[in-house]
Amino acid sequence: MTNRSAAGSAVASSQRLLETALLLRFCHDTIWIMKRFLWCAACCVVALSSALAQSPVFKIAPLRPVEELRKEALAAQPPHEEGAFLQPDLTELVRRDPTIKLDIRYATADNFLGTPVYTQARAFLQRPAAEALVRASQELRPLGYGLIIHDAYRPWYITRIFWDATPDNLKIFVADPKAGSKHNRGCAIDLSLYDLKTGTEVAMPSGYDEMTERAYANYSGGTEEERSRLSTLRHAMEKQGFQVNPTEWWHFDYKDWKQYPILNRPFEALGN
Image (cartoon, rainbow, N blue to C red; front, side, top):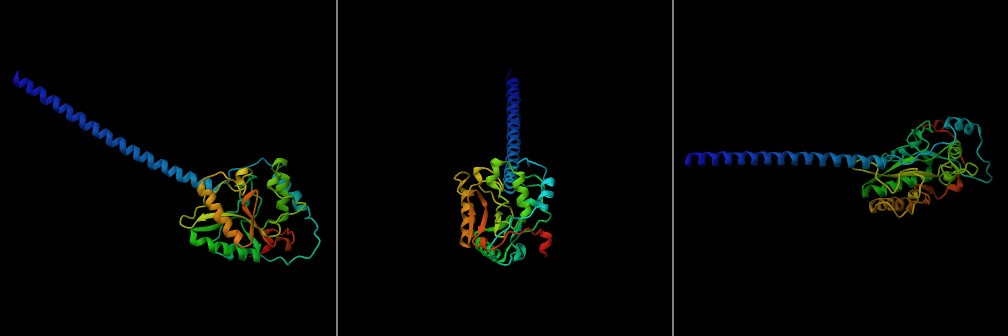
């Protein structure tokens, strides 16, 4: 009986050891799996945040096909203006400051109309406005930010396309071609910030060209970080003579826009 009892006790002890070992192995594997899951989830969050910061979140269904509207706009003439204007002197922004990045949405399908409307991905401003923009860029660099440009000078016929394509209830977000746009004068710019370390556009209270109240310059929603970045951008731009558009946080008008005429020159005619 003593030998059997001892043997039974040894077997039970071995079983407990085996069960303990299996349990430890299970816990180890579970922890490893959880770590992998959390790592993958974190990567997905970072990727999603980056994508949301760089991609538009708003698109409309154009009232008519854009190519049809383009033909009509190219055949039309800008409004006649009276008065004396300064001689236009459009200059290409990337040639003024190599840290300025371009993400010209209207040269791609990644815009509110869902189709390209520009033939080239370029950005121009009147020279004084371009020089002011460079100064704003220089002020932002020590803060870890660079400027990323979505649009600048815009030929008048593009403004006509936007107006004719947009439903009446959203026309507050596009310029009336009968009056022309400050973009047409080479004195308006659409832009945001990018992180100099990562090269990634930062998140703002709304996406570019979003036609909702989230796009308003004084929108009180969004995160504290987003509002802080927007405040940083506004401060740098306003210090150099730009004024933010109340309904579009990304849109800034240069102070001397009234001194320049409405232009309808395509990018191809502006040279290098």
